[in-house]
Structures are given as C-alpha cells and as structure tokens.
Image (cartoon, rainbow over all chains, first blue to last red; front, side, top):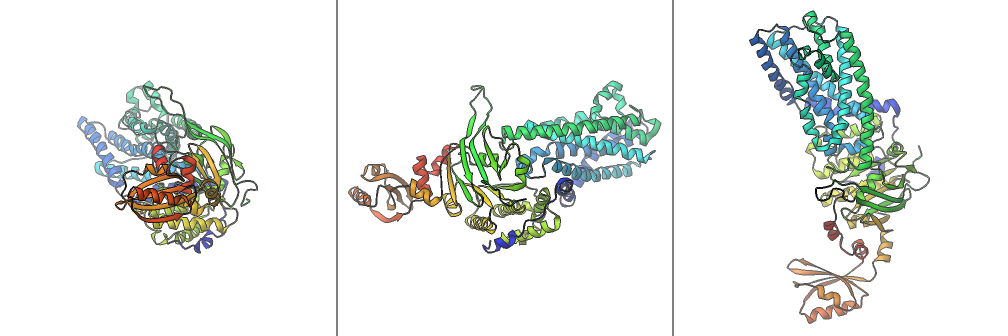
Length: 286
Length: 340
C-alpha cells in the first residue's frame, strides 16, 4: 500500500546525470545487461543454440567423411556451425529486435529516453555479441572434441583482427536491417527466414566459398561473413585452403564494409525515426 | 538545469495530426484520419492537468506528439519551453512517460534490474540510482518484490513498476496515459495517491494525465480538458466545469422494473433521462431544469404505476458535464470511437 506521507521522502533531491560519452556507455551497458544475464536465466540456449546447430553441422561432417574429403573439411564445417550462431544472433536478435521491441512496447520508450536510440543499439550489439561468442565457443569445442579436429592459428593477431573487423561489419549490417525490418512491419519474420539458408549457401558456411566460382563468391562478399570465413580459414588451414582473396585484401574489404554499414546504419536509424514520428509507425501496430 | 520552465510547461497551438490509412480495393485513396483537429492549450508549471475523453478522442495522439513520438501535421507544441519538433532531444531530457497496460521491459530481468536498466538510459550513476529505485519501490509497496522477475508480476504490480520507471529520472513534466486502466480498485487508488503526492513534493512538477475515468480526473486534476473527436470542447477546473456546463438539478431514482422510460423526457422540466436496469429494477438518472421539477416526475411515475423505491439528489458530476457537452455518455462515445 502506498503511504501518502512517504512520497516526499522518496522524491528526494534530483540525481546527477551523466552526459555525452559517459551516458552513451552507461546506456549501452544497461541495454547489454539483459542479454548477458539471460545466459544464466534462460539456460535452454545450451540446447537450442548449440546442440541444434551442431546437429546440422554433424550432418555435413558425415557427408564429407563419406566422400573421403580431407580432414580440413570437418574443420570448415565446425567453423560454419559456429558462424551460424552469429548470423542467427544478427538476424533474430538484432535485425528483428526492433520489431519485437515495438510489439512489446519497448521501442516507444527507447525513442523518448534522452540517450537516444544509438547507445541502446550499441548495447544490444555488445550483449548479443558476448552471448553469441559463448555459444560459438561451445559449438567449436564440442565439434572439435567429437571429431578430434585441431585448429592451429598461423597468426593469432591477424586472426583476431579479421574476427574483430568482421564482427563490427556484421553488427553494422544487423543495425541497418533492424531499421529496415521495422519499416517492413509484419514481414520482419519472413525477412529473417529469407536471410537464413541463402546466406548459409552464399557465404560458404560449410564449404570453401571459392567453390561457387570467383565472381559468384565476390558477388556475395557484401555479406561480411563471406570474406571473414574465407580469411579465417586461410589462417587456420594455410595453403590447403582455396582462398578467394589474400587475407590482407579481405581485411581491408571487411574494414570498408564495416565503415559502410555503420554509415548506412546511422542513416537508416535516422530515417526510421523520422518515418516513425511522421507516420506514427511506432504508435500504430500494422 | 532549471527545475521549472519560465513559461507554460506545455503550450499547444492549433495542433493538427492526421494519419494516413492504407487503401483497399474498393477505396484506393482513403481520406486521412484526423486524430487532432486544431488543439490549443496551455498548462502552467505545477499543474495537474487532465485530458478526459472517450477512446479515439485524440488523447493518446496528443501525448505522443508532446513526448516527441509523433510529429504534428500542422500547428506547434512546446514542452518545458522547447519545441517538440526541432528540440526533441532536449524535450526528452525533461520528461517521462508512463502508459497504462504497458508490457514494456524484459521478463527475465528482476524488477530492480529492469529499473536500473532504464536509469542508465538517463545517465544516472548506478549507486544513487539503485538507492532511488529502492526508495520508490518501498513507496509503491513493491520493495519486497524487487528480486522477482518482471514476467511474474501481476498487472497492478507491473503498472506500479512502470510508474517508478517514470518517476526515477525525476522529470519536470510527467505524462501519464491512462495509468490505471485495467487495474483493480486498490491498485488504481494506490497509484492515484502516489501521483498526487509526487506532484506536490516539489514546486514546478507538472503532470498531464489522460483518462476516461471521470472520477479519476475529478479527484486528481487541477484542471480538466474534455476532448472529443480531436477537439478540446471545454477546459476548466472540475468544479468550474460542473458549475458552468452542467446546469439544472440531478436526481437518481430507483423504481420497479420499467419497460422504457423515454416518455419521461416529455414531462415538463425534464432535460435528460438515462434508464439502466439494476437489481431487478430500473435506475433513472434525471437532469431537471430545477429541483421543483421532481414533483412532476413523481406524479408522472405514479400515473403509470411506476413505484419509486428510492430517490436521491446528486451534485452534477463530470459525467454530467460530458453528457451535456458531447450529447452522449462516455461509455456510449467509447463504443462509437476507435483507438487513438
């Protein structure tokens, strides 16, 4: 029961507020929290996000084994399985997240908080990345243990650089899609579905992408995972891997994609916010 | 940052907001829906201002323009002296919004975590923010539930948590959109009690409340605007509204069950009759020209063998004002309106 006399006491003095970069960091940390803490609270991910992707991966492993393919192909497939976790996260928890947030009523609140929507997306990306990194690591460890695969990184620094730049580009793409999916409304679900299997194929999740042919593979390189997977496989499997481009070229291209997607994401966010305010897209659930 | 703006806390001029709607095969280019049709109002700092109207009247649209969620189609609106279009980001520093029936947040977080997350969006340092959260949770009676997951809260608890979220940044202007909708009587009373005390705790705090509960507007608001079909048709203190708009005398009679009471409108001195079946009888709510007209009503009922079980003279309510201004009861207008 609310006590009438308690209200003034609770009102207290106005709390100080951080502004600028400190508030951006606070807001990002705040929004990443549910994703990180969710690892502990919803442990079903251990099954749905690791065991299920691993089943698909295992199927490919047996195909390669039956065909007598070199052992590195098993490593390809396990890497593809781990990458699947990132793509699933970007599509369902980044691109489609605004749509879910709109349905749940969060998006309206995000639009009226003073930090703006960008730090909230940053937090969403950060939390999603950390949670997914754990899932991907579990898939790699389980897969490597089951099939006795050994990964030997030739240049750890370069490996981490490729991974880092690719993640920035990938989550930039996720943020761009988040605005697009919101504008597409109910089609968001179908769009996320649409970007599953075709991307697995086009980015070479379970095979060297060069097998698509050089120009076809170059055509699918706007998806950051295509170049990232190829570069990481070069660093893991060396000359045995049929490379699409030299690693440093791929790093440069990934860097360009990262910049492009960040700019595009910012533009799309502003556009989405403007359209939302002009047309009432946050208020009307169509 | 000053706590209160020098001018009005809210200033709206000739505000129009329309929505485009999708065409159909029969009507490819339908006319836009007019949600706000030339609304003007001023709310001074420190006022508890109510917007009263049926569903679809434009209450929620007006709030959404004021909290920067919607752009006006034409006209202007200023909040805390800041333009909601060109200074939206600055407006957001000064306001908070709580809507009724809101299911925002993340079910896997606890109440305290959820509120902490929102405090970070305002840049509140964690230590003081958590202390404020605990204080506010104590006040609204949710402290014992602070480690409970949001998904496990009842509707009333969730709404109290949402109210704490709105109060946490200590806004200059608090927008409450139907904050007690769907709540049980006790929870709604608690929330009203706290809001009333909150606005008094610091001079300059302003609340804009939308509601379609007449008694809520009457109980809380310094001033009430009645909004209907996108237009403000009256704006006064509740007492003044009742005095000015609701002329005549009001009586409630309980009679044995009657088959239609429309004929009572022809009795001299009767301005309006509403008949409602109640407890195997009929409740007649009458608006008369003056107290003396009740004698004619009693005589007319006796002439038709309408036995009177009880009779009570009433003070006019906001409901009566609404009926007089709009021509129908709020529930009737609700049934005719859409969402706003």
